[in-house]
Every structure is written in C-alpha cells, then in structure tokens.
Image (tube, rainbow, N blue to C red; front, side, top):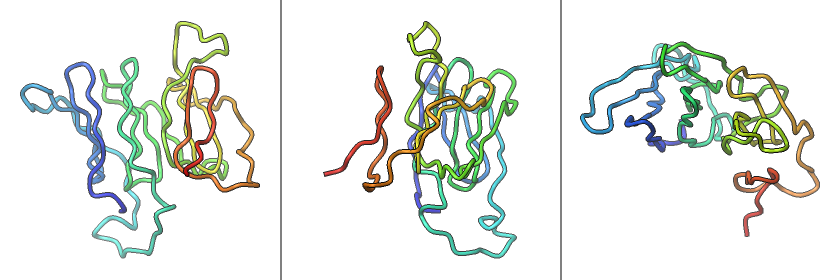
Length: 173
C-alpha cells in the first residue's frame, strides 16, 4: 500500500485511526483506552496469506482522514477497495461504497456538505472526488448530485474543493 501513515480524526474526546490492517480504532483521547475496534474487508491481494499482485497508486484510496459526523465515522482504508460508514454507538457497518462505483474511481473525501441547495440546518452529503465529483447521503449511501463528470479536456490535479456554494476541482500550479 502506498502510505505508511495516515491522518487521524479527533472528535467527541476520541481519536479515530484507520490502521490499514483491516481495522479502524477509536481511542480515548486522554487515556488512550480502546473505545472500539471496527473491522472491514481487506483486499485479498494485500493479505499476507494470499499471493501479492502488482498495484499502482491509482488502485488505492488517497490518504484521507476519518470523517466523524453525527454519530457516524467514514473511512477509506488503503487496504480495501471500499469506503465504509460505521455507526459509532452500535459499531455496525451502515453502508459501504466501492472506490470504482460506476467507474468513478473515487480517491479523496472532500468533506460533508448540506443535503439541500438552501443549506438547511442539516449537513449530510458526503462529497468524494476522483475521476469526477460524487455526492452520497452520509446516512443511507444514496447517490446524490452532481452526477456529471469533470471536463476531461484538461488534466485533473490535486484534490477538489468544497465550498458553501459549489464543489470544483483545484488546479495545481
């Protein structure tokens, strides 16, 4: 896998870390005590009991920190092709999404945006980038707009940008 260490998230007195070894850990921020361990499905080719196959950097999620939002944690392990959303109270997997869903080649989590165009009081649209921008209801996994891919007449560089008004790609200089 491409990255040896990944960013962590701190929320509600806990530190959330994706191990890239088949688990997400939630630790008490003050004592370091384990609050919970959440297990996910690893790529078979990364399991030491299976033969390794050659993978390129484009085959992995980017080094995204976990996102904690309204009792849910979103993770993109680099040893899995899936994005996972877990309920922090129950430890249950709420939904998952393949990195290559609809040939989107998701790579980065941009953040959480409002569910409705008027902003509403409730954020809940998970925004992903890769070959295009995609939005999903964070609680259900239902795909939301924008549905159109970014224009391919210029190279896409860097992570996207999510603002209060729109989500767009950033051009690297």
